[in-house]
Length: 73
Image 1 (cartoon, rainbow, N blue to C red):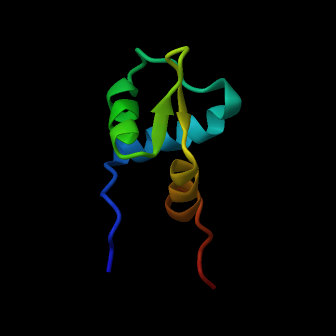
Image 2 (tube, rainbow, N blue to C red; image 1 turned 135 degrees about the vertical axis):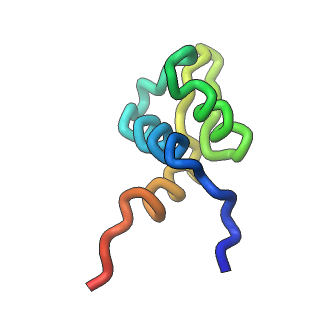
């Protein structure tokens, strides 16, 4: 049974960009700002003191499991 909150396509893309940004993080005010805020409320991202967003460990796990998953053979 699926027990994770659903991620809209735009939020999945925002999570992917967030993980790709690494330690630099994503600044607020970009087009994906609403998605970054939603990811933060879901515990998949957090906003640092400098206002940039970065993935949480849960966000990185969700990214790895759902976005970068390897196809079954």
